[in-house]
Length: 129
Length: 356
Image (cartoon, each protein chain N blue to C red):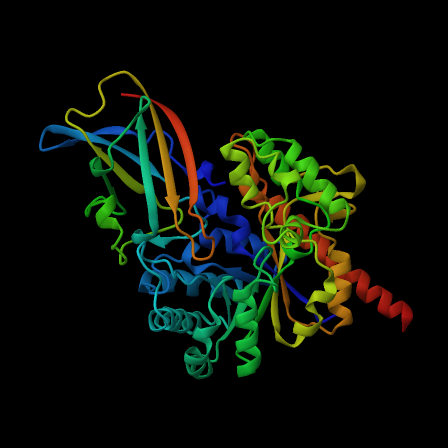
């Protein structure tokens, strides 16, 4: 239902830290119509060229300063993912994505206050590095 | 003279906001420029940090109110009972969160808070002293699939009646009065891969004066076998989980609750022009406006006959059923709906004058 919100176009790129490529980053809007504390991010899945990224390799941030694993984020209530603002997602991977064309599929699920099942949005993008 | 007043929920313009085509102030000016008098806001949507607003956000709010003169009618708030994945919030935690929302409403000059459906009635007694102190009213949303018949709403209504305070009431979402299943939902779902036969079934149900929530209730809370046999894929099942979110109730279901009704969400899926069923053009108002699923002339006549004098708020939800790559028509739909409501109210007034 909120598929349109998932995966901000042209946001996927490799991340360089201290001169070393440590992974890649992408951005998404929220699969909901309001902002929520980070603890209400129910799940995030990244599929890279048909292969599911392992959950511990994923980090998320609302400010690009403080990053959390998905397990850590479950207790993060004072950082709010605002409606209209991106969530930054990093996949920790030595050397990042290799140059060329990739297919990245992003799944975002958020818990709402009143619907028993999380609101999920999915979008697949072709990415050029 | 009808005392019914109109406003627009900013929920209606959420895609404009999300994709930064319009900011909060621009949305407010758009409403003002088009003769809208009041507005409804979801603080969690357009006021960063809500309910703990920064000086910067408060300044933006004050500027918007001063520059447009629009009346803040109501704020839609949520209770994150599932803030944590491993447990539900306690009653004390729930009340504490709601008190913060009440304080925010007071600062913003908003007299009414819509509590999202499923807010437990047991918070009310502890919350009431704060409502009285800050003179802010809370009202539970009565929404399709979560309307008067579910246990959580029944509990809330019972507690509301027991406490019998002017600071506690209800908001009615007119999605409980769908006379046809929304066409935009059907078209979006089929385009994304849902089995079209599902919609033939649902449309037949509506044609018989029923809805999928009713069908479930008649079958001990489950969809009947002749419907479930149409659910062939995971996508079909995902759609079916929300297919009961459009009810087809008689207006009289409101009769016993009228003294408690504080506000209405006038749900809008799709404005159409009479029987041609075409979308409005941005350039002109519709000559014979109608909403595809709900009959607002009937709803407004009912409310006027019962002496309702509160606000009715345009809440456009067709935006979420816009296919990728298709134009988003939020502004056009909102204005067409406001035009439709105004025409209905004008007709009610004219008929009273004729009778007089």
